[in-house]
Amino acid sequence: MSATAVESRSARQSKVSRRALRWHPGERLGYAMVAPAVLVLLAITAYPLVVNINNSLRSYNLLYPTAGNPYVGLRNYRDVFRGVSLDVGLGTALWHTLGYALVSVAVEVALGLGIALLLDRPIRGRGIARTMILLPWAVPTVVAAIVWKTLLDQQTGGVDYFLGLVGLPHTQWLGASTLASWASILIADSWQTVPFVAIILLAGLQGIPRELYEAAEVDGASRWHVFTNITLPMLRPALLVVLVFRTLSAFLIFDIIYAMTQGGPGTATETVAFQNFGAIITNLDFGLGGAISVVMVIVALVIASVYRLTLKPAA
Image 1 (cartoon, rainbow, N blue to C red):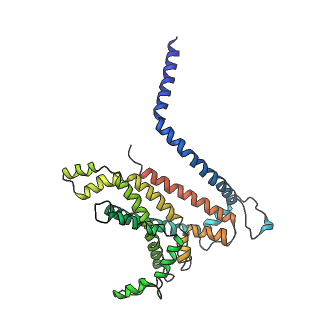
Image 2: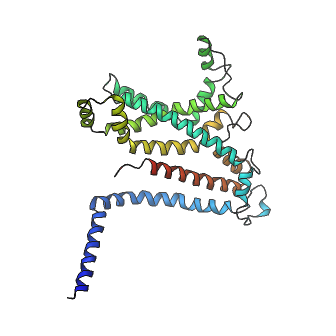
Image 3: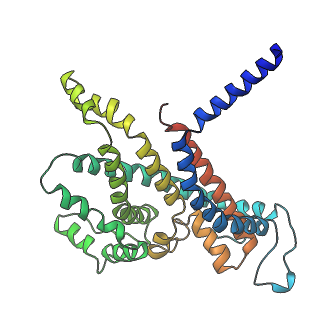
């Protein structure tokens, strides 16, 4: 056998060996078990996504059935950012959405992490507390929004009554000012979603080896150093899950706003999802609504990618 043939055979064997290392049996089993769910998700989402992209490139309004749905290119996207047929331009709604997402995610993750750290300690009644904390998350979102709308009502709600008992001024939470309306939305949203954040982060805390904390205690490390050098780095996978889910959920927020403020006062609390609802359901404009949906998908993918790159666990 020639030297060239030997080298070629050796190279093929080396390539097969590297592929075998990459695709060990456990990894192949994992992909095989995930594949059915991936195929189902693709079957459910791929067709509507393609139809939606096609609608976004056409003039397609059910209020004018005789006009058909002619191809118009990127005109719908231009109209979206100019605010044509919308209460406000998509740029304004996008700023509302991103601003709320930034504030709400920061507040909810901070509160959830604090609760998770507390429930991770060997305190009395920890099991009952872990069960009870999930109750707000189990309440349907619209129901939670209506309950909080009632509680924050200046005339009949209990929040203003208790504020008066401690000498604080009465506040018209809904519809009077932009800041109060956003604060009301944040209160209702945080009440329901902080338990979800806390449970996910608690699961991450439970996976951190206790030997690391014992070694840090022996070395005399302070609680802050333990938190920043052991807890937070080891919580990266759980934090990634929480941040992606909560940011995308906050970016797509609609039901709480619809139930509590209807986008008011004026258009101060209108988000991108609220604009999409108005375009498709109210105006029956599937072309404009399709363009808004595509923009939402792109922004959501960008957000998820940024989190993935920023919080990627160390190899």
